[in-house]
Length: 316
Image 1 (cartoon, rainbow, N blue to C red):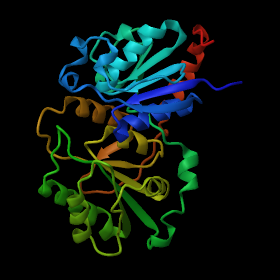
Image 2: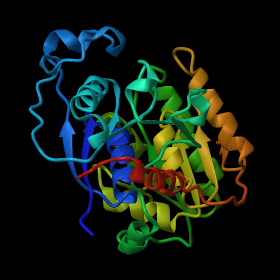
Image 3: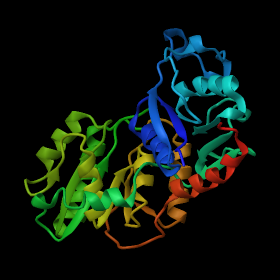
Image 4: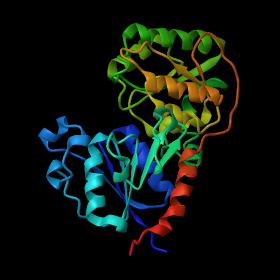
């Protein structure tokens, strides 16, 4: 059977790419990825008052596709435009709250902590993502030559956003807890930066920790996958619900390194409350504990439901 074709629309950020590609892979689509560029004026205008016209975005979309999967504010109007153009010959799925009428999409996938309600809304516990256990297994030995201890802790670092500014004192406080809780108790650290991690944070880490710790200083997907596979405990900074969700596929103890928010972080709080209630996370404090939980696999659960709905569409 010929694979269905997917068109992925995002702004190009890791968290968005992880979600759209994760769903596309789970649906077994033959997909292409389009990084959306809005015309300069329309970058400033909310989607709710933006006309559904092709002059709003610069992309010339001419490939064949059956399913559009979009994520992020910039991709909202292109997805609606394509749905209006092709109707029931395509399915359009938007990930996250689009901030427009939900009826513009066949399905919306939104985190449970967002509180979005609608007949076409599929809620997820945390963010869906692209990671698969096979990838973790394939990269298990990537960091092997640098491992010196039997016990490992991975610190997955995000970066500043409109809620957290990554103040140096906050970062050093997190590093101090890692030192006291883990390194002084026989753990070796693997620090993994993300695309949003400022270079100075990596340099602070190199100066703060001794030479026996593993500080990855570039964005290295293989190191990320390897660390998730081999770490006994995982610590993730509080700014990234997507990386916390990705870590939850392991079933391993996850500590969240909290920072003081610079504005109301209500959605983050709801996310943390949900994951704490599911016994997935605890706040990074002054103790190290072992616990387990059911590995989170929302991508496969949601994709299975969507596969059942595909019979309603005329993809001929």
